[in-house]
Image (tube, helix red, strand yellow):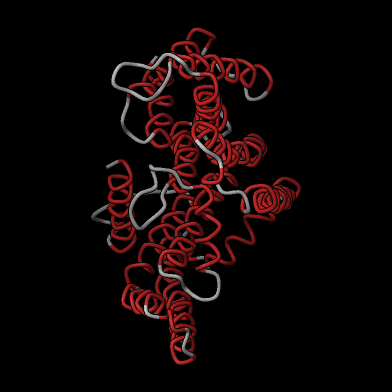
Length: 361
């Protein structure tokens, strides 16, 4: 529901922006360039998925019927995969790029705009990209070496759940290592990078679901090591929800401030620190369960304590704010209780609740 509402509003806003450009006497809407580029990236990626559905379906059908490993089937899969990539490139260059040129200030080419954007503050933005590259590289290598060959199915009972939970929360810790320094160092670069990363993950999900050559099967095999009972259906959404949950407060905070203010950190704190702590403590040491819930009181307490501690420390050590300790405590307690009783997806709900409470209190 949250995701569908977000995409519908995003698409409606993109339509109104284009209408304002073509009929300024009728409607005038001003959006900053990062917002416009984000719209082009995310909505464009969904458009690619919609337009290439017939190609992707044919690839998936051939993969399912490829148990005989015939050379004809392999050749057809490779040809259709190239067609998919070519169609995606054509949509980017033939539809998304012209739309962005139309809505960006001065009709600037989006690729040129990106280069200018990066070199406006090269000391912060270029080095931040280099930092992210090495964090991702090291993080993926550690995940492959440490987790990919160790199946949770080889471990019985509660230890299996604890190990699987630890593997999943590893990526929450990786998110903190990437997003926290990024937001504090350069909020605008972080906003844009969230959109780029979300678009890239959606594209990779197309490749995984439909086994697009050459990496579809390998990506699917790798991600199977991190699935639990929440990941049902064709698409794996946990990693997308984690990214969106961290990004939403950053995007929302830009509405009220053009700089790195504290509310933008709530997604990173809630998902990267509090939720991870609660999950690990709850699985390992939890004894008392909430009524009609598999979540434990110990996990909820650790959620609230870790969130409050992280808020106080980051408020003091970094951006600073006028929220006060009692607001941090209130947001932490309410978020912790909501995490314990809600049946909704934590990665989406809790960041929205936390930043909303910070504005309301």
